[in-house]
Picture (cartoon, one colour):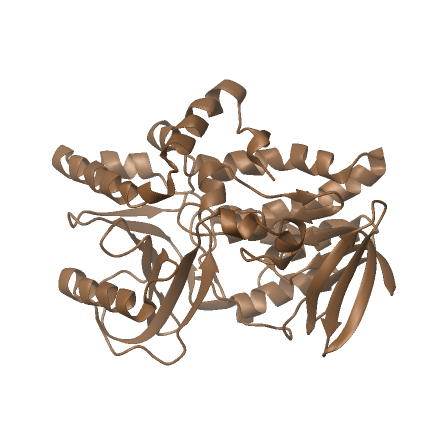
Amino acid sequence: MRSVDVVIVGASLAAAAAAKRLVDAGLETIVIERKELPRHKICSGILSPRGHRFLLENFGPLPSETVHQPTSCRGVTFHFPSMVSMPMDFFGGSTPHLHRKYSDHWAIQRSGAEVHDRTSFAGLEDKGDHVVVQASRNGEPVEYRARQVIGADGPSSPVVRAVYPGYAKQIPWFFVGQKFHDIIDCPLSADYFHFWFHPGLGHYTWSHARDGRQIVGVGFKRGDNFARKHEVVQRYLEEKHGVRLQPAADDHEGCAENFGPSLINRYVFGKGNVLATGQAAGFLNMIGEGMSCALHSGAISGEAVVEARRRNRPVQEVYRRMIASEVRRCTDQWNPLKIAFDKPHEADFPAALMQLGWRDRAKVLRDMWRFIVLFKEFNWGRQIVSGALQRPVIGGYSMQRWL
């Protein structure tokens, strides 16, 4: 059994950020990853300015192989059923279009942590003063002994399931899939990430250029038919936006996602000596960009381990106090009062809305309301309103809702 200070599960950007903090503090850290590195990662790759700043400050300039073509993104364009479109530039200027297969691997390498790829997490036991992690490497069982474990293994986190076996059944899950098309004609600007607030297309619909092709993506409640949903979106883009594409290539992809935790402040941060961070904890920005909050929450998880040891305090106590700032930043993006009266996003939605004529403004607000109603079945309305009203009173969001 290998004994180390910290084991991190998943070679993600959150893992790289956590590992960087731990290694810099002199803690022996191992990252285990079930796939061989560099590994493919399903992601749009559109990074926010905040995430870009984090990478530059902590890991340095991005190598050329870590970005797709086009290499940058200028901002986001929102599209509505009324055919009003709102392009919004990022406050911090254009940001990189990350190729996650290589950007994640580059960041993990730059963290200085020891990496064990082709090593699958199988379970854990928290013994109070240490955690035993069971894993499998190349089909052979292997164990680690660590003071702390950090789950940075994505929305369907096996680490979270090991700590809270019933958690996955308590929340709604969505399937998010994307297909890649050669372009015949595409009037959509390649400088922007395009998002549709359209209840007839799905819970999350987007499109953008990548490496000479056009991505058409759709998210919907798990259990629906991906091919049929995608066909509806592709037909809509052609009829309404003049987007003509070749049939999808064979390399389509998809994954399970959970939009709920950051929307209703229902995060899961672990138990005892086991921490969850990034999308495993439930962080996801409003347009589905999870990289920036993964980097920052991952760094906080590493800092919490270091601080807990320095002060001889329980790591969960320290982590939950420190992570509250990232919860505020992420959940603010979904808070209707913040959206209406503040600037919680990295593109100025209120300013873009005010540039429209009053008729178009009315259409946008009507369309957004109809889109929000799509989520009515999940009974999130009261929770969203409660959190929105609570935010100015206590300066944040209640920790009592966190696991």
